[in-house]
Length: 332
Ligand code: ADP
Ligand code: MG
Image 1 (cartoon, rainbow, N blue to C red):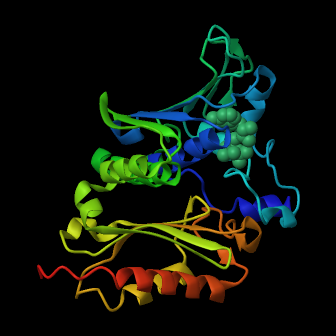
Image 2 (cartoon, rainbow, N blue to C red):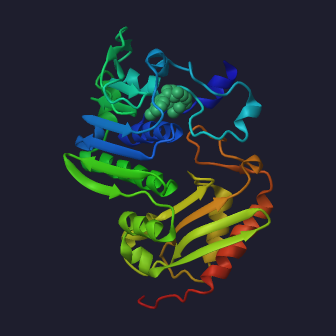
């Protein structure tokens, strides 16, 4: 129980974007190749995540909504090198406690099969009912915070909430090029991203998510040394201020906001930045999972490297070298 408290300290459900993140991480864990997101009213009215992953069997459906029933971690040691994104076993329980949730799933290849469980607030309908679904899972979350008016009041405008959703979506879609993604809002398809792990497919996705302007001005890099690999795109902030927050850094596929990383990046950019502009980048650091702890914090944005110095120096020198090849665009 102490361990459970330790790793579930943070609130999972803050706003629609955090629901999206948890549901999509589950879909990724289930080995999905396609993930479809649909929202209404910024996610306050409806959030639907549909995947084609391994599914949840009839008997496991109620368990999936039960708090901590599924935690994969039994000791602190397991926190190191944990491979799957989910490890607390409480996201679905927390979300269902503050919404009207429907979980439908099928573990077979027969689309006439499938089962559904429904929960409203803390009440779960005891019955699991037949509900046809292709192999995979759909989670529908309606009326987020309907039973917690104080939290409902905390939600911002539809536009703001959907902005956060889009940001979550960008990070998730940038973390897995091999998965196909769809994002719909208020019946409009905003993104339809085909899967593909080759260079051209990746660039197509970068362009779709971050704009072709970014791509045109970015430098592609791919550097490997001492068991570390850094690849991605670094750009110079030559254009609008709208790009100020286009900074994405992934460690072994997970988005990370980390001080050591930020410091190395800032140092590397120091000579090429002009006043008041922000660097733009999408970078992927890959290293042996056993030398990095990505679960330091419940929201999993921080990391702890076994050899921080090595990582810092590698990041700095790789980026510094790459940035030396781009000339500052003098439109200032
Ligand atoms: P966690 O992901 O931390 O285990 P969750 O509450 O997010 O906890 O999910 C509970 C469990 O339900 C998961 O461990 C998984 O077994 C199952 N599950 C949830 N979503 C899916 C999905 N989209 N596909 C397959 N299984 C799922
Ligand atoms: Mg989960």
